[in-house]
Image (cartoon, helix red, strand yellow):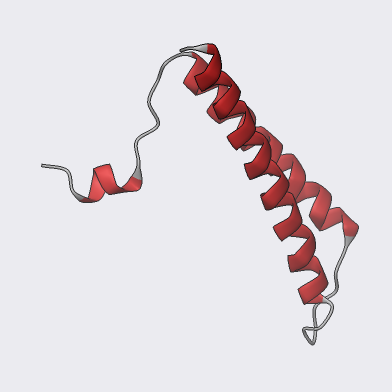
Length: 78
């Protein structure tokens, strides 16, 4: 893997983490407007821990040059 590819992958992983974390926060805000639901910081922290673990796993698998199959590869498998 070239330096540019690694830099690009790192940028994509960072952006994925940021966007996923923002979604977790917005989901908790949304829960504040839903009857019977309460927004909690604890849920956001749990979401961010899960996001971090998933991104770490993707990075490690890519470093080992293992390809993570796309869903479309399972659907259109011959």
